[in-house]
Image (tube, rainbow, N blue to C red; front, side, top):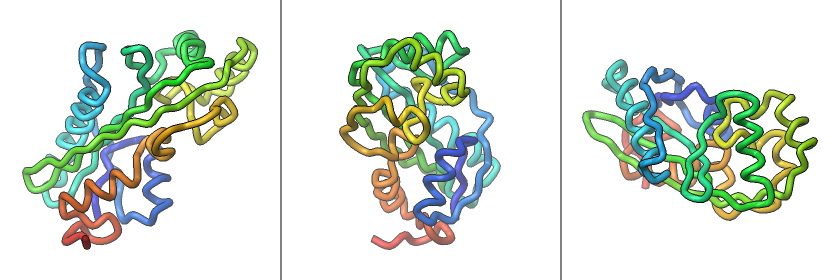
Amino acid sequence: MFILASASPRRKELLEQIGCHFQVAVSAAEEAGGQEMAPAELVLKNARLKAEAVADRYPDMPVLGADTVVSLDENIYGKPRDKEHAREMLLLLSGRTHQVTTGMAFAWKGQLWQAWETTEVTFAPLSMAEITRYIETGEPADKAGAYGIQGRAAVFIEKIRGSYSNVVGLPLHCLDGLARKAGIDLYGNGEGASS
């Protein structure tokens, strides 16, 4: 058993998909932002902040924090502020290949284990009408890069290189390896992961 320090329904669904034994406790940590950090550095910092904030409330349980960003041309894109910001992001991604990076952190027993993964995603060229229609669904509002690969934006994507679950919000293979390093059983009571 472990704690997921995230309000993301996508992360919850991914963990349920593979049969994890966990509960959700949303982190109140304020996320770091800004373009001065590399994507991996930023997501690792935010994952740590989220995990440590919740670990203070659950000192006897492993706590998983995660953060995902989209990057293109050395610029980082998180969740859009509003519809116009979402439109700007989708126009930038149209017809190009961008990177999705997720950082993860397990906080447990005063220790921290971290890992990150990057996936390349190639968008088809999008018309303004397609972008407008997609924004009106409301789907882009709470997603890094203003799109969800597991939703309607799936039709925009020509190809991906790397972990699909990473683009959804949690790279499951990488997570399994991180849990093993930390000795955390994703499927049981948190003690003694099998190797």
